[in-house]
Structures are given as structure tokens and as C-alpha cells.
Length: 289
Image 1 (cartoon, rainbow, N blue to C red):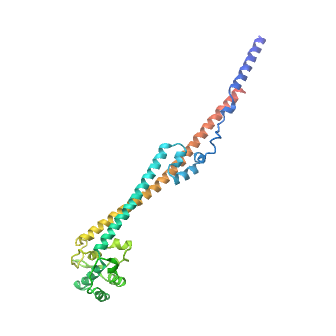
Image 2 (cartoon, rainbow, N blue to C red; image 1 turned 180 degrees about the vertical axis):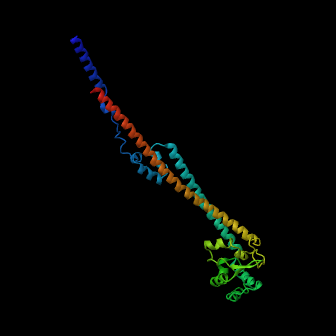
Image 3 (cartoon, helix red, strand yellow; image 1 turned 90 degrees about the horizontal axis):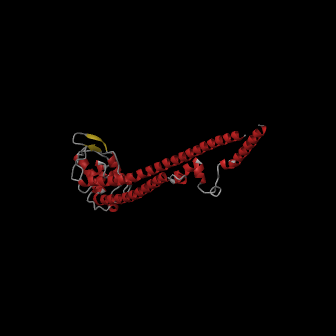
């Protein structure tokens, strides 16, 4: 019986030794591919901050480094589409703005506006300490719709002094003084005001002689309304380009945080896998020893 037990004990010892040899502990350790450890995008796969920074600069790059190809492609395509829309909108807006400026130069004159101001004061019996001087300035001159020439005939500071002392005259009552003064010719504000505020309606070449302004702008000439539409068109197109810039910034932000979370979650999964591996290894050690 002792011999038999000894044989069994020896067999068990041999079997246990053989099992130890079959399970190589080194094989249970995480394997590192040193051939790939020097890849330039390795930090993007391991460090959430680097992934965030990368996608903040180039949307989708952090996702691509972590082989999230669909999300990376969506961010890339969104960025490319928005850049394309921005460039086209900016180009179209400049063309539309130039078209409006040509239209305004050919149909609006400061001489028309100044002469109407003189008549406006006469028809409504308004007093203005600067109006007589302006009347002398515009006497015997007419608009030729060449802005450089027309503006050389009008003293803009005198014109502004007149405007600051001129009230709005409506059919029912006299209101406050004019809300704006003439901006410098050629400025962005100049082109905006002449087709936006009713006090500048008389500067258009198709304005009919009227000396009371309507609240609703119903007595504004056709060219005033057309100029307002042209101005709105290019402003809308510029606004579209501006919206694309906002959307691109948002795309960068969303892509950056998405890349950050992608690496963060991947690291947590690897940590969980490593913990499970350590538990399994501890169990094997306990079983054999």
C-alpha cells in the first residue's frame, strides 16, 4: 500500500511539474511590440491630452490614430465641407458687395441729398443755422453720379451740421432730429446707411419730390428698395460664411473631446483587462503552490 501511495504521489508530483511547465508565466504578461513603440502617433493612443490636442488642431486625427475610422472620416468630411462653403460664401459675398456698391455709385448722389435738405427746410419752414450756407453750396450744381466728383462739391462737415439740426417731419407731427449723419464716402457704413435709413432716400436718382417722410417708408423710391435688397443679399452671404467659421470651431471642440474620451475609455478597458489577468495569474500560482 505504501508503495502504491508513493507511486501515486510521485505521479502527482510529475503531473504537477508537467502542468507548471505547460503554463509559462511569461506568456501571461502583456506583450509589447517594440517594433511599433516608436510610432509618432503612439502618444495619441495612450495619452488623452495628446489626443484632445491633436483633434482640436485637425478634427478626426485623434480618432484616426485610435482606428476609429468612421468617426474620423465624419469629422474630416465635416471640416472639408465647411471650409468649402466658407470659401465660396466669402467669394460670393465680395462679388455681391461690389455689385451693390456699383449700383449705389451709379444711382445715389450726395448732391441730390444736399439739395433735398435745402428744399425740405423751405417746404416745412424749418430753422437751421447752417442751411443758408448749404443752399449757397448746392446752387447751380447737379449730380453726375461720379462719386469722387460729386463729393468734391459738398463740404461733409457742413452737411453733418445741417443733419444734426434737422428734425423728421411726418404728416402728423414733427419728430426728433435726424438719427444719423453722413459717413465718409466709400466706407462700409456709408453704403449701409444710404439704403437703410429713410432720411437718405432722397439721394437716389428716382426719388420724387416729397418733403414729409412716412414711418413705413412707403414713399421710398424703387432704387432705395432695390439697394436695400442688394445690401441684404451680400450681408446674408457674409453671415453664412461667418456661421461656417462658428461651425468649424464647434467641430474642432467636439472632435477634441471625443478623442479625449476615446483614449480615456480605452485606457480604462486595458486597465480592467490587466486586473483580470492579474487575478487569473494569482489563481494559477495558488493552484500550483
